Amino acid sequence: MALTLRLGQLMQGLMQRHELLISSVIAHAARHHGDGEIVSRRTDGSVSRTTYRALERRARQLAAVLRDLEVRPGDRVGTLAMNSDRHMELYYGISGIGAVCNTINPRLSHDDIAYIVDHAGDGVIFCDPQFLPIAAAIAPKLEGLRAVVVLCDAAAMPKAELPSHVALHCYENLMGGVEAISAWPNSMRIPPPVFATPPAPPAGPRACCIPTVPACSAQWRRISSMYWACAPPTGFWRRCRCSMSTLGACPIWRR
Image (cartoon, rainbow, N blue to C red; front, side):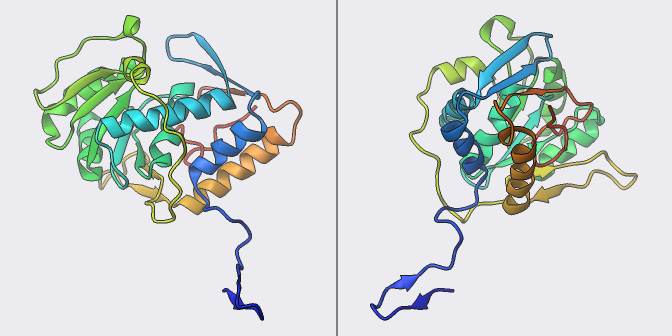
């Protein structure tokens, strides 16, 4: 609550002057620990090495890609992917523009995955190359699906037959054709950043929205205790048996 002072000014009662946003976490990492290394093993067996500064820039670059794909605040974006630097970019890029990251478990049946995507209203799906057959199998059932983006470069881009209303894109080709947005949007009126679906119970899949504050709080606790309290802030992304590789949805971020 703001209190009126003698000089007619307002004293702000907030503990910080910026909103508690997912993008503020990676922006803080890039600003104060930009050289901290992120190491991940991709699904093809290769090891990727990057830094918080580089990943934050690529996440802002992804934000421009999402806008070109007509993703707007409040829209849902599906991911069929395991833990990697690219999936980490998706987590921050999607939530950073006010969209909702819908992490999908590829171990579910095709019918369950199609139900999840349709119920969430995903307009775009990002998937690892090995999960493209799943996206291709469910695409004819999804009238609202506009595009499938494969998380790879042009050399590793697989082929697939998709319905005429669904475009197929290569992730690195899209990233190479845009400039990063200059700054993250700063608005409190944003939807929950994560929309996760656990393994399907007998009654069918059930979705779970993770609001911004719990998601941010979970990340800050993990980051501060595992990385930023250490010197230097370096860690290794271990591959998890769970597909929900967003930091707020699955506790798999460890050294």
